[in-house]
Amino acid sequence: MKKERGILFVLSGPSGVGKGTVNRSLRNQWNELEYSISVTTRQPREGEQDGVDYFYKSRETFEKMIEQNELLEWAEYVGNYYGTPLQYVEHSLQNGKDVLLEIEVQGALQVRKLVPEGVFIFLVPPSLDELRNRIVGRGTETDDLIENRMLVAREELEMMDHYDYVVENDEIQSACERIKAIAKAEHCKKDRIKKQYLRLLEVE
Ligand code: 5GP
Image 1 (cartoon, rainbow, N blue to C red):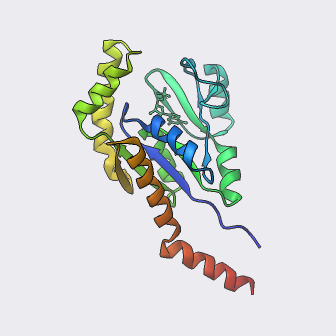
Image 2 (cartoon, rainbow, N blue to C red):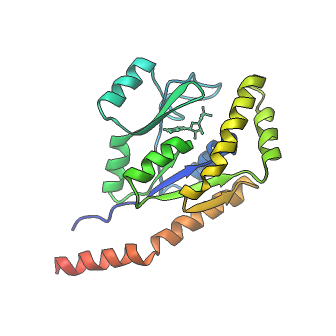
């Protein structure tokens, strides 16, 4: 009998809110979930590894991937391309595995259109001041870049309406617990369970 399709979870939110940290923390504590590794044209940061944090590609290669429809979604963000490899996501979902994408908002909107049955989670900072602290605290960006990111962040906050859930990132572990709770609840959704019953009854 055909396996039930997995659920696509999309974790998104303003710049500097800690999506990457929450994503990495989830990876360490939640093995049943498949984590899609994005493709990017940005340079690896210290400690990052190709094939673990991202697949690092040239702009030329990335543009070829766009042309050949190899990406589920992609966006240009602060001067670099970021995208989600389509095949890995599709293959995992088909095999009944849940997949988590951690992507910025333009990409999330594209996925919302393509996969409306996905679950869209918006991660927010406890406050904008806190967001500024986090961005400045990172210490790897210039003032201009920080201001640019703040501007993008304000716009992103207005985008909350496109999401199903909002999770405050007050503390990493609490945010992870809420995301896991959302996933559990989604698996108990009547419509999903009903579909499984109907499919079972069709087979008999
Ligand atoms: P960073 O350069 O700090 O790793 O990531 C910058 C932004 O790109 C983050 O908001 C991150 O969520 C987003 N991002 C990472 N991978 C993807 C992707 O595949 N697609 C899109 N649209 N955004 C991504």
